[in-house]
Length: 325
Image (cartoon, rainbow, N blue to C red):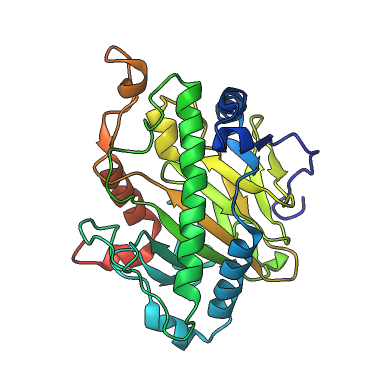
């Protein structure tokens, strides 16, 4: 069998939802219902009408590639911090306890205000580490962060609408978010690395919601409801959005956090722009807040921040050696 085999499927196997009428408020309910149906099935959705200008994504991509193409010694000036900000070299992450480390490189950052300041009040929230050799990287990156965050807010309000909840039920009670953005760079991956080596190995995402801007290279694969791997190719003008583990827990398993992986056999470099949305760290994740106090939740309440600390500690090698974590 060919390495990392996946089926090519037609448009519609992964739903495509236009969220324009949700964003502008003109007719949100049909959009909310379409999102709800997708979340209960595959948990992956192509999103049209997202409102992120093409120039924002192009500028972010240009800065990211300029960074990743620099020598490792330069990138190491912003090596990942204890607050999970900065550069993660190839081999620094694995998304499953028993997997080999991933081939990807990443650059990560989070919320900061207009003055460039970020609260330093949580193990996964602190000062962003911008390289001094790419002057336009901070404004371009923060523009993507804020636009993608707006998309996440619209989607989560749509989810709440479909579930009959207050519109901000999944956004937390004020305060800066724990969200992280990342540029994720995949070198071309030869088949001879073996059948258990991936750009990103099979995994589910940790937090509440992931917003992904693919490039034209492809390589994303999703495990469908029958357990088969299918390709999730780029569709021009769309984002890929998927439910992550905390949202599945929050909804008592109704919304599905689906395994996915990346294999870059294109012979070219591949770059993704990613927002991992999470509410403020003190936000309590409890399915009984959705279904009522008598709901037999299978998981105990946990704060968003505590859950992510535990998951990050297992996934990222650098955190195993942090005495301050």
